[in-house]
Image (cartoon, rainbow, N blue to C red):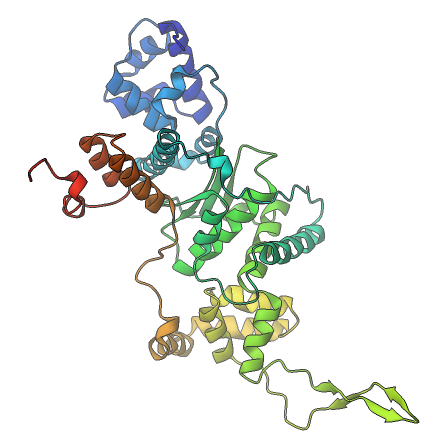
Length: 412
Protein backbone atom coordinates (compact mmCIF):
# COMPACT_ATOMS: atom_id res chain seq x y z
CA UNK A 1 0.00 0.00 0.00
CA UNK A 2 1.35 3.42 -0.99
CA UNK A 3 0.84 5.97 1.78
CA UNK A 4 1.48 9.68 1.80
CA UNK A 5 4.13 11.41 3.88
CA UNK A 6 1.30 12.91 5.94
CA UNK A 7 -0.18 9.45 6.66
CA UNK A 8 3.23 8.05 7.63
CA UNK A 9 3.70 11.04 9.93
CA UNK A 10 0.32 10.37 11.56
CA UNK A 11 1.17 6.69 12.09
CA UNK A 12 4.53 7.53 13.63
CA UNK A 13 2.87 9.93 16.06
CA UNK A 14 0.15 7.37 16.87
CA UNK A 15 2.72 4.59 17.49
CA UNK A 16 4.71 6.86 19.81
CA UNK A 17 1.65 7.92 21.80
CA UNK A 18 0.36 4.34 22.13
CA UNK A 19 3.71 3.24 23.51
CA UNK A 20 3.78 6.12 25.98
CA UNK A 21 6.93 7.82 24.69
CA UNK A 22 7.36 11.60 24.52
CA UNK A 23 8.77 13.40 21.51
CA UNK A 24 11.86 13.95 23.63
CA UNK A 25 12.24 10.19 24.17
CA UNK A 26 12.01 9.60 20.42
CA UNK A 27 14.48 12.38 19.68
CA UNK A 28 16.97 10.92 22.14
CA UNK A 29 16.71 7.47 20.51
CA UNK A 30 17.52 9.03 17.12
CA UNK A 31 20.18 11.44 18.38
CA UNK A 32 18.05 14.40 17.27
CA UNK A 33 16.50 17.41 18.95
CA UNK A 34 12.81 17.33 19.91
CA UNK A 35 11.69 19.85 17.19
CA UNK A 36 12.95 17.39 14.54
CA UNK A 37 10.51 14.74 15.78
CA UNK A 38 7.77 17.38 15.88
CA UNK A 39 8.46 18.20 12.22
CA UNK A 40 8.49 14.51 11.22
CA UNK A 41 5.14 13.91 12.96
CA UNK A 42 3.68 17.03 11.33
CA UNK A 43 4.68 15.73 7.89
CA UNK A 44 7.05 18.67 7.34
CA UNK A 45 10.22 16.58 7.36
CA UNK A 46 10.85 13.24 5.70
CA UNK A 47 11.97 10.36 7.88
CA UNK A 48 14.99 8.46 6.56
CA UNK A 49 15.09 4.65 6.41
CA UNK A 50 17.66 4.61 9.24
CA UNK A 51 15.46 6.86 11.38
CA UNK A 52 12.40 4.73 10.63
CA UNK A 53 14.32 1.61 11.71
CA UNK A 54 15.31 3.31 14.98
CA UNK A 55 11.75 4.48 15.68
CA UNK A 56 10.33 1.05 14.80
CA UNK A 57 12.75 -0.56 17.25
CA UNK A 58 11.79 1.95 19.95
CA UNK A 59 8.03 1.48 19.47
CA UNK A 60 8.29 -2.29 19.12
CA UNK A 61 6.90 -2.50 15.58
CA UNK A 62 8.29 -4.03 12.38
CA UNK A 63 9.23 -1.16 9.99
CA UNK A 64 6.91 -2.54 7.28
CA UNK A 65 3.90 -2.27 9.61
CA UNK A 66 3.86 1.50 9.00
CA UNK A 67 3.11 0.85 5.32
CA UNK A 68 0.53 -1.91 5.69
CA UNK A 69 -3.14 -1.38 4.89
CA UNK A 70 -4.24 -1.95 8.47
CA UNK A 71 -2.41 -0.16 11.25
CA UNK A 72 -3.97 -1.71 14.31
CA UNK A 73 -3.16 -1.61 17.99
CA UNK A 74 -0.51 -4.02 19.17
CA UNK A 75 -0.13 -5.54 22.60
CA UNK A 76 3.44 -4.32 22.92
CA UNK A 77 2.24 -0.71 22.92
CA UNK A 78 0.17 -1.57 26.00
CA UNK A 79 3.27 -3.09 27.66
CA UNK A 80 5.43 -0.04 26.93
CA UNK A 81 2.76 2.26 28.30
CA UNK A 82 2.28 0.13 31.43
CA UNK A 83 5.97 -0.28 32.32
CA UNK A 84 6.80 3.40 32.68
CA UNK A 85 10.15 2.69 34.37
CA UNK A 86 11.30 0.80 31.25
CA UNK A 87 10.83 3.93 29.15
CA UNK A 88 12.96 5.94 31.58
CA UNK A 89 15.81 3.45 32.15
CA UNK A 90 18.06 3.23 29.05
CA UNK A 91 19.36 -0.25 29.97
CA UNK A 92 15.90 -1.75 30.42
CA UNK A 93 14.59 0.12 27.38
CA UNK A 94 17.39 -1.39 25.28
CA UNK A 95 16.67 -4.89 26.63
CA UNK A 96 12.97 -4.64 25.89
CA UNK A 97 13.56 -3.19 22.44
CA UNK A 98 15.92 -6.06 21.63
CA UNK A 99 13.40 -8.64 22.84
CA UNK A 100 10.65 -7.14 20.72
CA UNK A 101 13.02 -6.98 17.76
CA UNK A 102 13.63 -10.74 18.18
CA UNK A 103 9.87 -11.37 18.05
CA UNK A 104 9.41 -9.19 14.97
CA UNK A 105 12.36 -10.88 13.22
CA UNK A 106 10.86 -14.32 13.93
CA UNK A 107 7.48 -13.33 12.50
CA UNK A 108 9.13 -11.80 9.41
CA UNK A 109 11.20 -14.94 8.77
CA UNK A 110 8.19 -17.21 9.27
CA UNK A 111 6.37 -15.15 6.67
CA UNK A 112 9.30 -15.43 4.22
CA UNK A 113 9.53 -19.17 4.73
CA UNK A 114 5.79 -19.73 4.48
CA UNK A 115 5.45 -20.97 8.06
CA UNK A 116 1.89 -20.48 9.22
CA UNK A 117 1.99 -19.66 12.90
CA UNK A 118 -1.69 -20.50 13.21
CA UNK A 119 -0.74 -24.09 12.32
CA UNK A 120 0.93 -24.37 15.71
CA UNK A 121 -1.09 -26.09 18.40
CA UNK A 122 -3.20 -23.19 19.65
CA UNK A 123 -3.46 -23.17 23.43
CA UNK A 124 -6.85 -23.92 24.89
CA UNK A 125 -8.52 -20.72 26.05
CA UNK A 126 -9.97 -20.70 29.55
CA UNK A 127 -11.69 -17.32 29.42
CA UNK A 128 -13.26 -16.95 32.84
CA UNK A 129 -13.49 -13.69 34.74
CA UNK A 130 -12.93 -14.49 38.39
CA UNK A 131 -14.92 -12.38 40.85
CA UNK A 132 -13.58 -13.51 44.24
CA UNK A 133 -10.30 -14.67 45.73
CA UNK A 134 -11.73 -18.12 46.42
CA UNK A 135 -12.91 -18.47 42.82
CA UNK A 136 -9.43 -17.44 41.62
CA UNK A 137 -7.84 -20.18 43.78
CA UNK A 138 -10.30 -22.87 42.65
CA UNK A 139 -10.02 -21.95 38.97
CA UNK A 140 -6.22 -21.79 39.11
CA UNK A 141 -6.10 -25.32 40.46
CA UNK A 142 -8.72 -26.68 38.06
CA UNK A 143 -7.08 -25.18 34.97
CA UNK A 144 -3.63 -26.46 36.01
CA UNK A 145 -4.99 -30.00 36.35
CA UNK A 146 -6.83 -29.75 33.01
CA UNK A 147 -3.73 -28.44 31.21
CA UNK A 148 -1.44 -31.13 32.61
CA UNK A 149 -4.00 -33.72 31.52
CA UNK A 150 -4.44 -32.18 28.05
CA UNK A 151 -0.67 -32.03 27.53
CA UNK A 152 -0.26 -35.60 28.86
CA UNK A 153 2.36 -34.54 31.41
CA UNK A 154 1.47 -37.13 34.03
CA UNK A 155 2.62 -36.33 37.55
CA UNK A 156 6.39 -36.06 37.03
CA UNK A 157 8.41 -32.83 37.49
CA UNK A 158 8.69 -30.59 34.41
CA UNK A 159 12.22 -30.28 33.08
CA UNK A 160 11.78 -27.24 30.83
CA UNK A 161 8.58 -25.16 31.11
CA UNK A 162 9.57 -23.08 28.09
CA UNK A 163 9.43 -26.17 25.88
CA UNK A 164 5.77 -26.61 26.81
CA UNK A 165 4.94 -23.06 25.75
CA UNK A 166 6.94 -23.62 22.56
CA UNK A 167 4.80 -26.66 21.75
CA UNK A 168 1.76 -24.39 21.99
CA UNK A 169 3.20 -21.79 19.60
CA UNK A 170 4.02 -19.28 22.34
CA UNK A 171 7.31 -17.36 22.18
CA UNK A 172 9.22 -17.01 25.46
CA UNK A 173 11.73 -14.24 26.15
CA UNK A 174 14.12 -13.61 29.00
CA UNK A 175 14.43 -9.83 29.46
CA UNK A 176 16.12 -7.78 32.16
CA UNK A 177 13.17 -6.01 33.78
CA UNK A 178 12.80 -3.58 36.69
CA UNK A 179 12.65 -5.06 40.23
CA UNK A 180 9.11 -5.97 41.20
CA UNK A 181 8.13 -7.03 37.68
CA UNK A 182 8.47 -10.78 37.14
CA UNK A 183 7.14 -10.86 33.57
CA UNK A 184 4.55 -9.81 31.03
CA UNK A 185 2.42 -11.32 28.26
CA UNK A 186 1.09 -9.71 25.10
CA UNK A 187 -0.40 -10.49 21.72
CA UNK A 188 1.70 -9.60 18.68
CA UNK A 189 -0.39 -10.92 15.82
CA UNK A 190 -0.23 -13.72 15.05
CA UNK A 191 1.97 -14.63 18.05
CA UNK A 192 1.50 -14.70 21.80
CA UNK A 193 4.65 -13.62 23.64
CA UNK A 194 5.53 -14.30 27.28
CA UNK A 195 8.52 -12.54 28.82
CA UNK A 196 10.10 -13.18 32.23
CA UNK A 197 12.61 -11.20 34.27
CA UNK A 198 16.06 -12.67 33.61
CA UNK A 199 17.39 -10.89 36.72
CA UNK A 200 15.30 -13.18 38.96
CA UNK A 201 16.55 -16.42 40.54
CA UNK A 202 16.25 -19.42 38.22
CA UNK A 203 13.46 -20.99 40.31
CA UNK A 204 11.52 -17.74 40.10
CA UNK A 205 12.04 -17.63 36.33
CA UNK A 206 10.65 -21.16 35.94
CA UNK A 207 7.66 -20.19 38.06
CA UNK A 208 7.17 -16.98 36.04
CA UNK A 209 7.18 -18.86 32.72
CA UNK A 210 4.23 -20.95 33.92
CA UNK A 211 2.55 -17.95 35.59
CA UNK A 212 2.64 -16.07 32.26
CA UNK A 213 1.36 -19.19 30.48
CA UNK A 214 -1.76 -18.91 32.62
CA UNK A 215 -2.22 -15.31 31.47
CA UNK A 216 -1.77 -16.45 27.86
CA UNK A 217 -4.52 -19.06 28.06
CA UNK A 218 -6.89 -17.16 30.38
CA UNK A 219 -6.54 -13.41 29.94
CA UNK A 220 -5.01 -12.35 26.65
CA UNK A 221 -8.28 -12.43 24.71
CA UNK A 222 -9.77 -9.85 27.08
CA UNK A 223 -6.84 -7.41 27.25
CA UNK A 224 -3.97 -6.58 24.83
CA UNK A 225 -1.29 -7.29 27.43
CA UNK A 226 -0.72 -7.93 31.11
CA UNK A 227 2.24 -7.05 33.34
CA UNK A 228 2.94 -9.13 36.47
CA UNK A 229 3.95 -6.84 39.32
CA UNK A 230 4.54 -7.68 42.99
CA UNK A 231 2.24 -4.82 43.99
CA UNK A 232 -0.62 -6.45 42.05
CA UNK A 233 -0.34 -9.77 43.89
CA UNK A 234 -3.87 -9.46 45.30
CA UNK A 235 -5.43 -8.96 41.87
CA UNK A 236 -7.69 -11.95 41.15
CA UNK A 237 -5.99 -12.61 37.80
CA UNK A 238 -2.62 -12.75 39.54
CA UNK A 239 -3.92 -15.02 42.31
CA UNK A 240 -5.28 -17.43 39.71
CA UNK A 241 -1.98 -17.40 37.81
CA UNK A 242 0.00 -17.97 41.03
CA UNK A 243 -2.14 -20.95 42.01
CA UNK A 244 -1.96 -22.28 38.44
CA UNK A 245 1.84 -22.08 38.43
CA UNK A 246 2.21 -23.85 41.78
CA UNK A 247 -0.23 -26.63 40.87
CA UNK A 248 1.16 -27.02 37.34
CA UNK A 249 4.78 -27.32 38.50
CA UNK A 250 3.97 -29.35 41.63
CA UNK A 251 0.94 -31.57 40.96
CA UNK A 252 -0.73 -33.05 44.03
CA UNK A 253 -0.25 -36.68 43.05
CA UNK A 254 3.37 -36.07 42.07
CA UNK A 255 4.13 -34.50 45.46
CA UNK A 256 2.42 -37.30 47.36
CA UNK A 257 4.32 -39.92 45.35
CA UNK A 258 7.59 -38.12 46.07
CA UNK A 259 6.88 -37.91 49.80
CA UNK A 260 5.71 -41.52 49.92
CA UNK A 261 9.02 -42.60 48.39
CA UNK A 262 10.66 -40.98 51.42
CA UNK A 263 8.22 -42.61 53.83
CA UNK A 264 6.42 -39.34 54.52
CA UNK A 265 2.82 -38.08 54.32
CA UNK A 266 1.51 -41.65 54.47
CA UNK A 267 -2.00 -41.95 55.96
CA UNK A 268 -1.96 -43.24 59.55
CA UNK A 269 -4.85 -45.57 58.72
CA UNK A 270 -5.13 -48.04 55.84
CA UNK A 271 -8.10 -49.90 54.32
CA UNK A 272 -8.63 -53.28 56.02
CA UNK A 273 -11.64 -55.11 54.52
CA UNK A 274 -12.97 -58.08 56.56
CA UNK A 275 -15.40 -60.86 55.65
CA UNK A 276 -18.22 -61.10 58.18
CA UNK A 277 -21.02 -63.62 57.52
CA UNK A 278 -20.10 -63.82 53.83
CA UNK A 279 -20.16 -60.04 53.49
CA UNK A 280 -17.18 -57.75 52.97
CA UNK A 281 -17.10 -55.05 55.64
CA UNK A 282 -14.81 -52.09 54.93
CA UNK A 283 -13.05 -50.42 57.81
CA UNK A 284 -9.67 -48.82 58.45
CA UNK A 285 -6.88 -50.12 60.61
CA UNK A 286 -4.05 -48.10 62.16
CA UNK A 287 -0.64 -48.65 60.56
CA UNK A 288 1.81 -50.59 62.67
CA UNK A 289 4.80 -48.51 61.57
CA UNK A 290 5.28 -45.03 62.96
CA UNK A 291 4.12 -42.23 60.66
CA UNK A 292 7.09 -39.96 59.98
CA UNK A 293 6.53 -36.22 59.70
CA UNK A 294 7.76 -34.07 56.84
CA UNK A 295 10.98 -32.30 57.82
CA UNK A 296 13.08 -29.46 56.42
CA UNK A 297 15.31 -31.78 54.37
CA UNK A 298 12.24 -33.29 52.67
CA UNK A 299 11.10 -29.81 51.63
CA UNK A 300 14.57 -28.85 50.34
CA UNK A 301 14.79 -31.95 48.15
CA UNK A 302 11.18 -31.62 47.02
CA UNK A 303 11.76 -27.99 45.99
CA UNK A 304 14.84 -28.91 43.97
CA UNK A 305 13.18 -31.98 42.42
CA UNK A 306 10.23 -29.94 41.13
CA UNK A 307 12.39 -26.92 40.25
CA UNK A 308 10.65 -24.61 42.70
CA UNK A 309 11.75 -22.26 45.45
CA UNK A 310 11.51 -23.46 49.03
CA UNK A 311 8.86 -20.80 49.65
CA UNK A 312 6.70 -22.14 46.80
CA UNK A 313 7.21 -25.72 48.00
CA UNK A 314 6.12 -24.93 51.56
CA UNK A 315 3.12 -22.99 50.26
CA UNK A 316 2.09 -26.00 48.15
CA UNK A 317 2.46 -28.41 51.10
CA UNK A 318 0.36 -26.12 53.26
CA UNK A 319 -2.23 -25.78 50.51
CA UNK A 320 -2.52 -29.58 50.38
CA UNK A 321 -2.85 -29.73 54.19
CA UNK A 322 0.33 -31.81 54.41
CA UNK A 323 1.85 -29.34 56.88
CA UNK A 324 0.25 -26.73 59.15
CA UNK A 325 0.84 -22.99 59.24
CA UNK A 326 3.27 -23.21 62.16
CA UNK A 327 5.45 -25.75 60.39
CA UNK A 328 5.37 -23.73 57.16
CA UNK A 329 6.66 -20.69 59.06
CA UNK A 330 9.29 -22.80 60.83
CA UNK A 331 10.61 -24.10 57.49
CA UNK A 332 10.82 -20.58 56.05
CA UNK A 333 12.59 -19.28 59.15
CA UNK A 334 15.04 -22.16 58.96
CA UNK A 335 15.85 -21.46 55.32
CA UNK A 336 16.86 -17.91 56.21
CA UNK A 337 19.30 -19.11 58.85
CA UNK A 338 22.89 -20.23 58.36
CA UNK A 339 22.10 -23.93 58.98
CA UNK A 340 19.24 -23.91 56.47
CA UNK A 341 21.41 -22.39 53.75
CA UNK A 342 24.15 -24.92 54.52
CA UNK A 343 21.71 -27.81 54.19
CA UNK A 344 20.44 -26.47 50.84
CA UNK A 345 23.95 -26.08 49.43
CA UNK A 346 24.89 -29.54 50.72
CA UNK A 347 22.05 -31.21 48.83
CA UNK A 348 22.89 -29.32 45.66
CA UNK A 349 26.40 -30.78 45.82
CA UNK A 350 25.31 -34.23 47.00
CA UNK A 351 22.77 -34.85 44.27
CA UNK A 352 24.09 -33.73 40.86
CA UNK A 353 20.64 -34.18 39.31
CA UNK A 354 19.41 -31.39 41.57
CA UNK A 355 22.30 -29.01 40.91
CA UNK A 356 21.48 -25.46 39.93
CA UNK A 357 22.17 -24.78 36.24
CA UNK A 358 24.74 -22.10 35.52
CA UNK A 359 21.94 -20.13 33.93
CA UNK A 360 18.29 -20.75 33.26
CA UNK A 361 18.08 -22.18 29.74
CA UNK A 362 14.36 -21.61 29.58
CA UNK A 363 13.73 -19.49 26.54
CA UNK A 364 12.85 -20.53 23.03
CA UNK A 365 12.71 -17.23 21.11
CA UNK A 366 16.49 -17.02 20.53
CA UNK A 367 16.63 -20.67 19.48
CA UNK A 368 13.72 -20.21 17.08
CA UNK A 369 15.29 -17.10 15.55
CA UNK A 370 18.54 -19.02 15.04
CA UNK A 371 16.86 -21.98 13.32
CA UNK A 372 14.70 -19.74 11.10
CA UNK A 373 17.68 -17.59 10.09
CA UNK A 374 19.69 -20.70 9.14
CA UNK A 375 16.75 -22.10 7.16
CA UNK A 376 16.26 -18.80 5.32
CA UNK A 377 20.00 -18.67 4.50
CA UNK A 378 19.91 -22.26 3.16
CA UNK A 379 17.03 -21.30 0.87
CA UNK A 380 18.87 -18.09 -0.15
CA UNK A 381 15.98 -15.92 1.07
CA UNK A 382 18.31 -13.63 3.03
CA UNK A 383 21.79 -12.27 2.35
CA UNK A 384 24.93 -13.20 4.25
CA UNK A 385 24.93 -9.80 5.97
CA UNK A 386 21.29 -10.26 7.02
CA UNK A 387 22.13 -13.71 8.41
CA UNK A 388 24.94 -12.24 10.50
CA UNK A 389 22.62 -9.49 11.77
CA UNK A 390 19.97 -12.04 12.78
CA UNK A 391 22.46 -14.36 14.47
CA UNK A 392 23.80 -11.45 16.53
CA UNK A 393 20.21 -10.63 17.47
CA UNK A 394 19.72 -14.27 18.53
CA UNK A 395 22.61 -13.86 20.98
CA UNK A 396 25.59 -15.42 19.18
CA UNK A 397 29.03 -13.83 19.44
CA UNK A 398 30.98 -12.92 16.29
CA UNK A 399 33.38 -15.77 17.03
CA UNK A 400 30.48 -18.24 17.08
CA UNK A 401 28.88 -16.70 13.99
CA UNK A 402 31.98 -16.99 11.82
CA UNK A 403 32.25 -20.69 12.62
CA UNK A 404 29.03 -21.11 10.61
CA UNK A 405 29.84 -21.69 6.89
CA UNK A 406 26.94 -19.59 5.58
CA UNK A 407 28.24 -16.59 7.54
CA UNK A 408 31.74 -16.73 6.08
CA UNK A 409 32.82 -14.79 3.02
CA UNK A 410 32.98 -16.73 -0.23
CA UNK A 411 36.23 -18.65 -0.35
CA UNK A 412 36.90 -17.75 3.32
